[in-house]
Length: 380
Image 1 (cartoon, rainbow, N blue to C red):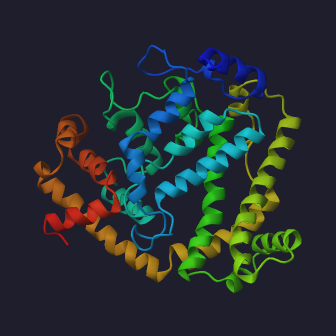
Image 2 (cartoon, rainbow, N blue to C red):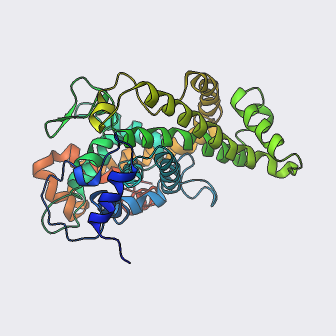
Image 3 (cartoon, rainbow, N blue to C red):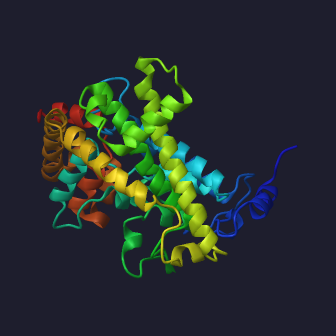
């Protein structure tokens, strides 16, 4: 028998925790819509994100290594899908809204520029006197303004809960609001889960990419307590694990250790707090979903190794900076020759101004399209 939307909403109310975000109690969309779909509001949001052009472009955007360096390295898209997977696991375990968590997780990086964090820094420098550039804010611009797929509105017209969940940096500001409603000092539990899932994912999977690239070595990680705990878990559960499979299995245990820690801490937080609504979660003195102090202590040196030996490794920095220089050339080229931009971008020039329009245009590029555009305009 087909499950109706009303039945699904009833199921949410019966099964989810009292502080979970319920589809039937969403604060709605900026542009009201008729709702004839069997999907809940958050399921529709998730599907709109997955079917958007900005989501599809993540396939060719850098995570750590410039896209095309090797077939097995993660892209911004595979990273996003991994965040979605971890987020769903955490949401299901905590009995909160899995669909809302998925929507936030899937949209959290669609505002990223080409060439990873190096590209983001370059755009922020270029836009320093014009509001700067932040990929979280840019994700909101894509879902609220820049996508042009629907006949009645710009953007994807997502629910308030998803839009609020994407504003993780803004929510930390005093008295932060969206459409007149508070979005802080902490976010909904689903948004907190998406945020932690992002950290868990890059802290585990970026290690795997670094090991495969030869920038990290298992011997170089052996002094890190978190890595040793992962290895100990593997040896305990799989005493006959073949040596060649020890490292990839340990990477998976990095996920397990972090997820277990987050769930244990969340259970303790819920046990001592009286949380009867999403608003109670947001107003709570501490985050409900976070790493424990002991896990944070282990993660600090772990992250330092990632930054020192991988993200800022000369080979990675050199490749990224070379690519980012092409983006800088493109940015200035479009300022001087705006007619070389697409018609949609030109249509926003009057409202957004030349700097923001060019920023929107260039930030939406994939790595390979940016390189192709440089060649086409003789900038390479």
